[in-house]
Image (cartoon, rainbow, N blue to C red; front, side, top):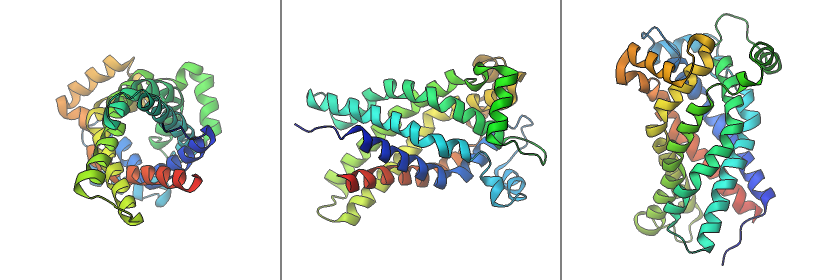
Length: 281
């Protein structure tokens, strides 16, 4: 019988994993959000890239502080809950690693979304501000609370939850699936540390791509709700507006940077988590 790692190890590994995800993935995340919130229908990847590059590196790291501060906490809750449930199911002899990861997604996504939504809302507002003046994190938080109350920090929660549940099945389940296939059939690592690292990176990157395929439509609704304020009353009104603008294509705005970001950022996240856990153990 295997035992679960101590909670503090999961916390530390989640923090390192979250930091790696944000540092590697944030520039392309900013591009994705810029394309998603465009209501003119004219934005393209190249024009969005040029607009952000006018501010230098800072333009691509708009809204960097909220996810950097909170993604470690999010990953602690999300990954810790997911793998704790997987451990419990494994002790009961239930299912395969892939099916256990899929089953653990819903409760883990529900808990982590309570932390994700305020972070995503503040990040999205910072990423989509226009003009030369940029709001600091504390000033922006105070303004949202003053103008909208605590509900303002949780605008878009329903869309975030749908994105995380739908994408989470493909994320943790996909990572377990690819890791099983790589380790047991396609590229057995044997005793090679590099081969183990290679498989963790490949499985993590493919899991990241898998996450965005079902999650992106909900994520776009979330971005619109968070960035446009009262322009859209709720997820249904926002989805209807997207359909009027571009039909089905509107729900996959920003797919290019999302997919470009998915592999390296999530490969880094899974590698950081795995390497930290191995070092601690």
